[in-house]
Length: 528
Image (cartoon, rainbow, N blue to C red):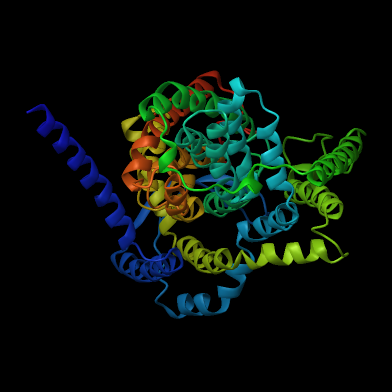
């Protein structure tokens, strides 16, 4: 009787996972998906215009003298299936793409990250950090490095996750626990970091486009979530360590080495040349940081804004140029490392690395083109503004309050992530609706973006829609030949649940304390 009950539970659980996988697999490619969305906006705009769909509320409008003011405004849907609309779609397609906010920021950041990655510096850093860590600190170090590795795009997935399993095995611990700890950090803590990564400018650019629906003068800061995500790095590390040591590893039991395949020792071996390369890269990084710090010290520094501030309004050259500084912070040490170890044997080594990095961005460029059309169609037709006004009026009428609203949005983002893996693709869909809505409710675009990032990251590790999920299964099968989707998901659910709960609680505490979520970025936004 008991046995039958247990079997039924497993069957229901597997059917649930299969259902999620089936729904996600039926979604078209993100590029095709956004092309369909753009086409849908064209049709919907015509229908809404014909029906006279509109919404009324307070918006920031530009006056004849060039100033801005808050006015009660009625916004009516504009059709794209008119002479003006068709002309707009034809003549503005290229401009929509080239002015797409995330495009330049992501590509510039990836130039520097690509040099560091292709030189081998990122891989050597991960191996070196784990190698010098005491046994008692292996778990938190693996989780922490997983969180930090998302700066370098996919390096954490392809290097740190298998490395985490190997390190645990070397210390006589279950390798699947090491794999889970690394996966939790890399993917579950995807948004947290001590530094600004490539995801920050990408999401900020999308938020910028969405915020312009309400206020064309508002600038979404690339560092808009930095303070909160800096603290989140330690929260994710602590929770990830607890779950690994107290829940996951005890559940796995004793490890049976007969299930394992041969391992690649080069993933854990640090050569003397690599050590020397890391030393030179470290010196180069310190020298670059020192130059930047010195440049920021003078009262009239070119890094500061007109008010003599590094952070504040208006945004300073330091903040506006942070993406370039990040690119250089990776590029300069990467070149030093590559020259030392020989991966960059000629002067064109770094150039070739940048070329490879740009070549890997082909899919992003194609997605950026259709995403840019979708967002700009949303703006042109006023559908985004109408939805934002309607949503804001609804939430004002029910007076739900900031904290319940944030919790609902975090949970909604987490649920959406089960069916669509790409963080930027989902934000391209959600931002044009929710960022303006939050602004009309008096909350900053950066806060809306932050709530999204918490929900999105927390369920990364349990959705088969995550790009690298199949790769993780392959790594797991080195230690458990029967490992599959159910194995990984069941192992990672405790991380996902606790990340979601405690990360959301941290947000609630942050909101109650009224702390800034980034340099010069608060919780509220004042219309006008």
